[in-house]
Amino acid sequence: MEALKGKAAVMIEPGRYTSGRIAVANLSASIEALEQRRVVGASFEDLLALSNLLFLRGDLLGRIAGHDRAERVATEALGASSDAGSALYLRARLAGRFHRFREAGALLEAARAAGYPDREVDVERAGLLQATGRYAEALALRERLAQDDPGIHTLGALASLLAEMDEWAAAESSWVAALEADTSVSPFPCAQLLFEWGVSAMRRAEHDRAEALLGELAAILPQHMPGRGHRAEVALARGQLDVALALIGPLVELSDDPQYRATYAEILAALGERAAALREADRASGAYELLLARRPEAYADHAAAFFMGIGNRPQRAIDLALANWKLRNTPRSRSLLARALRGAEQAA
Image 1 (cartoon, rainbow, N blue to C red):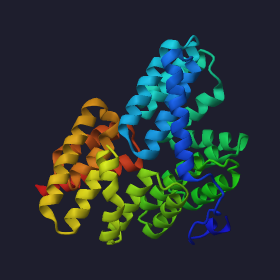
Image 2: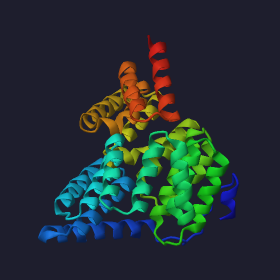
Image 3: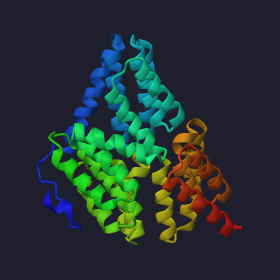
């Protein structure tokens, strides 16, 4: 793990984790077992477990339909709950996942008042504080949670916050500590950590570092579709168009997330295939509008970035970036809005 502490390639020891293929197959088997139990009448705990696993698989495979299915099961679980605190906490987590942050905050405090455990509430609250730019409050919670239970989840969450605060050296130290604290054989927590670390490096335009991290993610969990999609973005930024095209091609068919089709359109445009790029951008535009009609808060940021770029609708980008900024006043949301305004001015 020593190589993680510098700018050298990340090195996770071969065989450190269960094979990604086996882990994903086991995840799907667990989901199917819980689905069978659901048919004959599952408990609240069974439905909650099923929802969590469906969300996890949807995250790993980049499938929005998986998130929809997970939400339906979670809603079913609410009807099976006899504990007000658990139901309120579950509602808060759903609201937070889909970026309804104010609603999520109110539900969390209601769950605490109903007797839901403080630690679980604090974990979720730290995420809401971070998402909405209240970094000082989030940092106090993240540091306390990491001190009380220094594991891959708490230290990784602290690292992601430090990265957003532009404390990059401290963030990388915390990511290293998180990996060293990981005692599980499942590749999923490590994969998600490497993904967040790699995306943070991308945001800093450290493309070599991002490729090293996302490449290591691909080595332990090649089925991680968001990681593959971001590797394609890194390759595009580095001018490696053939690599970018090879990475993104399968995702356009395997995932229903329009972000990958948008990246595909950008790569085609860079290759000079204008007609194909416009066709793919139009398909991505339609998919984004359908998602925005259902979950405007959850997709405002990604859709704004798309419409200010290959989507080529500057005013739509401003409207979405402004809506996103109103949801969460963070450095990234302010930067997104500023870029949308500059893009519209240049287009005019």
